[in-house]
Image 1 (tube, rainbow, N blue to C red):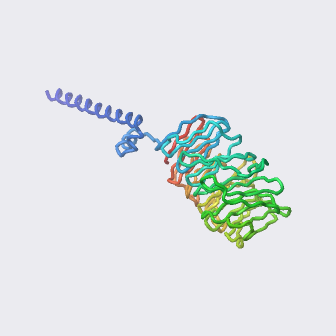
Image 2 (image 1 turned 45 degrees about the vertical axis):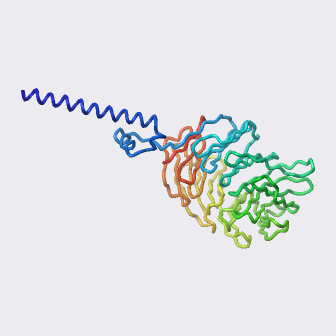
Image 3 (image 1 turned 90 degrees about the vertical axis):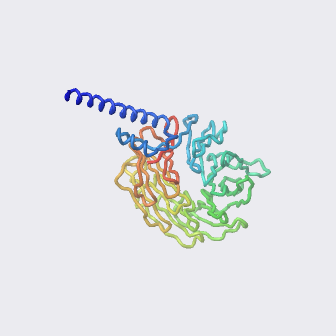
Length: 382
């Protein structure tokens, strides 16, 4: 009798355990099928822990047409892509909010806040996109002369700066409003303009030109074509942007120079004979550079510099990145085996393993990442 009662209890206990296990499995399957709804609840996390499941928090996904010349950028937490065939923009929830069936050969995307400018080097059209609406920026001049684009930037207010080639001059720089209207233009005869940027407050234009003796950086107010201030160097600089409201960063093959907004004070970071292989400049108080001993291949290291040319952080012991991006104080670096998140001092804040097949890792200001693969994209949080 006693033995039978023990056996009965064992069978009942086994049945209860089986039911509990079945319920956990059902919950796990439900979690997998309805993850957007569950939003990573504590119960879901317990289920994952119980089964040893490790899963990144995928917050949204994007579905788009794939073309070999697609280029991508993060736009106000969402995604914008462009190619010779189309332009598409998605919000932060993965919803398509803008689509156009024609694009640009060799498309380039410049972003600022809620705005993106889609253009191409040597082209003449600029498509300004904001929250699902598009505005064509036109040169608005009576002549039929060509005005090929050299550089385009857009700030957080939608003001767009365009450097163009000009007949009779060495170039021109135009500033357009968010409504597409031309609000300023300066023609240049003393040097060939390579890049230009509008100050964060939209009141001052800084222009980088190539001269016979090297480079020249000049500042203009938008109510005059006369230079306010200028700075010159015998180095050949190729890129320029504001990294804060009072500091401009200019890059050459030899150094990064940080100029005050008056162009009278400067500080420099020398590359020490290394090559600059990639960079990100913006309005977040730092410059992000990839330097290496060789132009192609070999080892490389990442460095961030503050407005005084001092090193904020450096990564020396990793393989060369396949790409990186920055948004606010967040930096996403794509390596061959994972995506690593850093702050502006290059202190690691998270990672996403198994990055096989990921082509772009686009940082978002909230610390998440848009991961673009060969057949789609998704937002994930480490």
